[in-house]
Image (cartoon, rainbow, N blue to C red; front, side):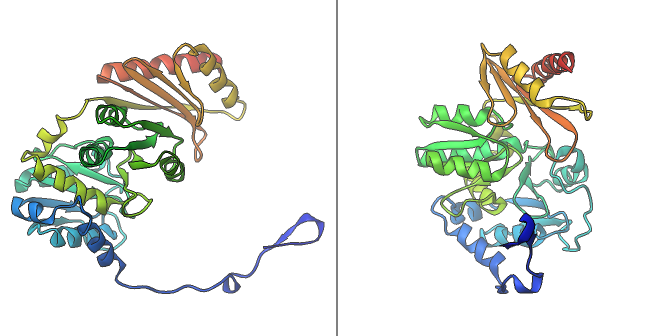
Length: 328
């Protein structure tokens, strides 16, 4: 891009911006890289004789996850929505509301667990042997717990992720840091603090030993190793971790809404609590938190809260919603 007259910019035609190279076979190479990680134990996984349901949401996960499982020695894989058509069988976001049929399939097949990914295979969610969601917030928590048992260090997640990662990190003698929402922000903070593991509560695992990016394949390898090492079911594994509940709400905005002013007033009102303002306003209370941030894609303020019970998470959210509406 070159500066032109009158402070305008001229852009090169797309066929002049450079070249590209087609490199085939990278899904298999990626799977091989995961299998070679020191903390991915192929022999243990194979010996466990797991039965796994995979929902590839009719995208590349339908190729990558079954391929990885085969390389890890998992022989009994039930493929669901693994035809790579690009026509999603359900809403591709790996949330419970979109995975009713997948959960039912896990229970119906008597599988040990279900694995669900999004279309670009960077978000990872699990379903337990009862056909219940493990909770995508706990994908990172579980993998981090495993890593921290073998390698002491720090962790990072974004401000809207569960407090359970902080608890697990503190218990292991490490330091937890929060980053602004967004993978690039999490990665920057991980590099800054030398984190051994990090990611986002939406099921995104970032393991620097392989690369700095959310990666469902590495999450699968590490999660399965941890599961079989513990000789337990997926639902039993979840009980190892502090249990929190999250509530997600929103405030509809009008063109006249002074979002920055509202957030500044909320930060001041709760200044006696732990307040973080690197991305909206997050208020940490003794047993929970609330995070308010303006959406980058919709005219809303997202209001995420977490507590030790559903009622507490809802109570905290409602308290901040009421305060914000007064200020509007």
